[in-house]
Image 1 (spheres, chains in turn blue, purple):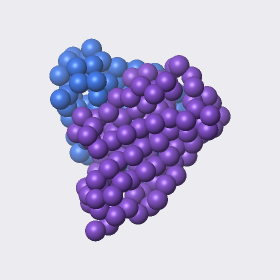
Image 2 (cartoon, one colour; image 1 turned 120 degrees about the vertical axis):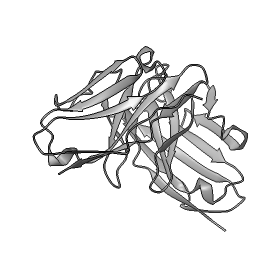
Image 3 (spheres, helix red, strand yellow; image 1 turned 60 degrees about the horizontal axis):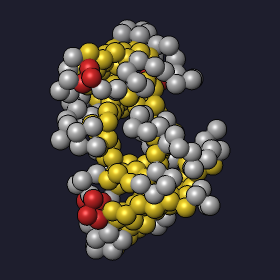
Image 4 (cartoon, helix red, strand yellow; image 1 turned 90 degrees about the vertical axis):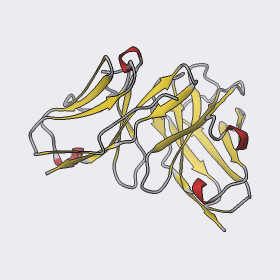
Length: 108
Length: 119
């Protein structure tokens, strides 16, 4: 089955740029979606189809996808960005939706 | 604005069947553009896709759960449902329903409902 690998945690100071990676075999050939989940809340879609943002999501959130790594980038990180982030793809081989293990973003 | 709301028992006994319903409002469950999805999250853990159902009744299930899952849809009530049989403590989780634009992202989610399995 297809596996997505995320770092367990990323730490960044306010105002800096943070990047969360999502690794998978030839993930660049898939559409990657990213979710933000704050404690006690449902996940919220923040980036879809690699690099598109739903309405209401700040431009500070951006995505990219190439080769074996997809990346969610936060420019000018704010305290309110502190949350768990998950990547997700559809694996055509197994006909399964697959999530990464999640990354906790900590704003120092 | 599309809204999804899960409902069902918060406590299920081990070996019994977990049954949840998701009610969709603000959009048509009969749209050909979407799959209707169940996702769960065990306490302190990540997200696990359970499966989804199309308005026609076509289903896709996670193979790890396939032998225990049944999903159904009632378009007249704008609801879709999950049955998970023979539950164990490992099935204790927050269960979410969500909308999926045909193997794309999950763009709308319910608030989630915690189901605990007791012995």
